[in-house]
Image (cartoon, rainbow, N blue to C red; front, top):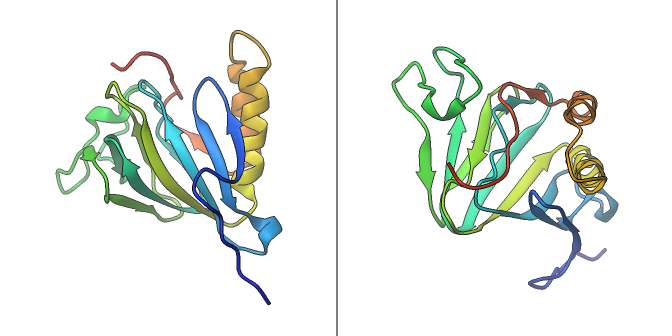
Length: 173
């Protein structure tokens, strides 16, 4: 039996106008957790969402990113950045070495509100759900000048993603 070594910069890449994903370790490698390197451009907001059957782990390698991982006292409007937890916690600005674990059923989000790209290690369980999700969203993002929000919504439903606030990308707020 052999393991797997993936050198820096290697792995299958999906590049869209919204983000860059490099597949590092996948179900095809026999792993139950999908592992990706993700570059999050300035202005990208994944939107608050929840998975009922998946768990996720994010580790910031470079840059600073705003993170949320809690059920808020109140889910207000279409912007999660002002949400507060029952303990009074809010969004955290995370830098290199910071991590976020998201258990099943926990609302979570991230946004790059800086002017520089952020690079993160991202793991998702079970494999290969997020692998397929990234492949499909790359197809939707590359299909034209505008993104079909209905197609994104239908795709997310298939992959256990309940969107709470909108996905956005563009200039940082």
